Length: 234
Image (cartoon, rainbow, N blue to C red; front, side):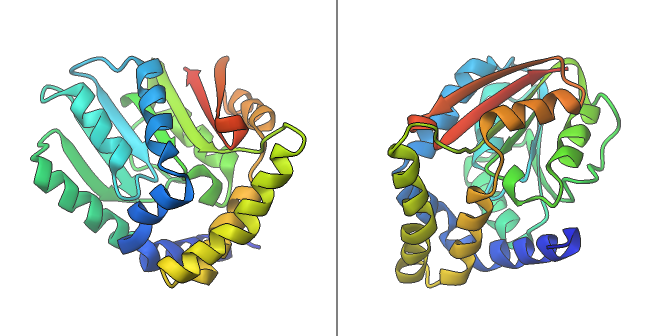
């Protein structure tokens, strides 16, 4: 699949499923994605008054968590290329009255920011959907300040024998069926399982971080390896 074809397909998927995305995410991950993100936030040790960028922000949950941690003297930007997903993120922001948070439409492959702009740059369950993983990691590296942190929370490939097969079965067959019966979107959730299944394992992704320019990368697996955090310092 060409880069342009993948971008167009992913855009269609998220424009269509935006209204069901949050509820389906909780069903598919048994709400574990919330605990995973909370643990990652603890490990990030976000400082009040700093500034952060959440790439592929989707419906904005990680950007909102960052805004809560950073407080009113800092700034958080959530970037995504799906208007429909951003509309839901903006509705959440308005309900919480977070003035330090802004959502903008943009492309993760060409971040519209100056070099060395952010203390923290995050991406949650979005890297697997971009056309070129390394290009996005290099862009995230570029816009991070020296000493800043770049953090990725993403699906991963379980390594335990038996558990890996069970996880692959769930992702490949059960996830699209859940999408069909709950969100009426079989094709879209088939795409999401495909992107998750084809995503590099945690060790390959760590090497990509190093290739993008980072010198130190911490990796932590969650729930038997179905998800993993990569935290890198510039």
